[in-house]
Length: 363
Image (spheres, rainbow, N blue to C red):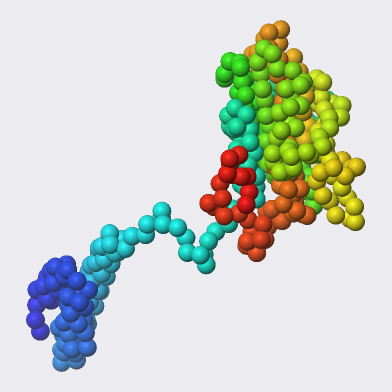
C-alpha cells in the first residue's frame, strides 16, 4: 500500500490549489471517487492480516474524512468567490421606473400627510418632530393638564414602567405620547418666537373600534408671535379646510369648547349634507366636526419658556385618518392597518403623484 501521509499531502494541496468547481470536482473523483486513490487503498484492506487491517482501516478513514473536509472548505471558498463575482456584474438600477404590472401604491395616510404639509408649507409652516415615547412633563404637565385630569388615567394612556419598577403614571413616568402636542412644547423650548410649525406623527391611546385605533396619526399646528389673534387662527383653518377638501365655498364654523392647553378653545365643523344617506361635503344644512383649536394658554407659554406678557399664539390639532376617511370615502378606520394589498390598490396613490398647491393635491 502507498504511504498514506504522502497521499494526504498531495490530495490536500490539489484541493486547495483548485480555482474552479470543475478542478475541485476532478480532485474529489481522483482521490475519493469509485476508482479513486483512497478508495483503491480501501479495497486492498482484505489482503492484510487482521491486526494490520484494523490499524490501516482507521488510518484510511481518517484520511478520507480529512480530504472530504478540505474539499468542502475549498468548495465554500469557491462558492463565495463566485457569488462575489456575480454581485459585481449583476446590478439593478433602483432609480429606473417600475414596471407597469408591478407598480406600488402610496398609502392614503402618507398621501394625506403630504397634502397637509403642502398646504401649510405654502402658509410658511415648517415640519417639527419629536419622540414617540414621551415624559410626563412634555405630554401632560407643560400642556396645563393637572394630575387629576381624566386624560392621564390608564384607560386613555399607555404608561411605560421604569427599569426601577417605579410608578409609570408618576411625575417622572414615561408614556406613549397621546398627542403630538409635546412636539409644540419642544419647539418652543428649543427656538425663540416667532414660531410657525406643524407636528405630524403617530400617537397612542387605549381605544379600538371602527372609528378608533390604539395607534393613529395626528397633525398639530402652532403659531407664536407678538401679534397673533383668533382671527388669524380662523383664517388659517378656513383656508386649510377649503384647500384640503377641494371645495372653494366650504362652510366652516367654530364652536366654543374646552381644552386645558388653549383659552379660548373651539371645535371646528365643516358643512355637509346627509341627504339620501350619503355624506357630501359642502353646503347642505348639516355639520361635521373635524378638529380642535384655540389660543395657546398663557401657562403653557410660560412652562415652555415663552414670555406670555409679550407673546401669544394659536394651536390646532386633527386626526389624519379621520380627514382621510372623509376625503377619500374610506368607511372603516381599521382597514388602514390590515395590510390588504387589494385595499391599497383601490385607495392607494401613485408614488409619482406628489401633492402641491400649484400642481394639485391628489389626482
